Length: 185
Image (cartoon, rainbow, N blue to C red; front, side):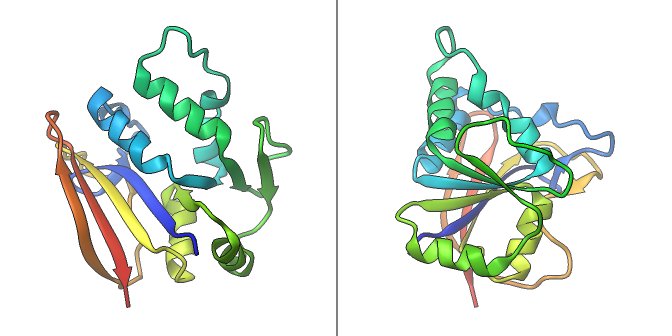
């Protein structure tokens, strides 16, 4: 059975964007990006909300010739994976291997996890909150940047209590720390 993994880049105080909606501080350097690629390489399906999908569309068309290896690697991962976008407003998908779902229904995702040979990744805190509340998230990967932004959009959902077991941690030269947790209980 595949795992559903929530992965997020966040400030140390737990935000994915600041109060102005900026996240320029969150751009991964080559070292972090290469590690993200290692982790995302096992993903067969990305689950995304509309906003996250629209941010990631660029990976479908970015020219790869003069890009660094980490950029090329993630583009290949993105292009090879299936994408499910949850949106009530998006008319059509503009990327390959993409389908749109109008509402979040946990039952089809449970079935997808059971039959999938590759892990699933949920992107974006809004959609991840639905997955957490439905008990679907198996692992949580947090890339914490050494910055406090003081407010904005929170990385993890409110009104949920879950036990987490630390499976792995890694420090990067930039001060970014990766924490990998398994959801327990």
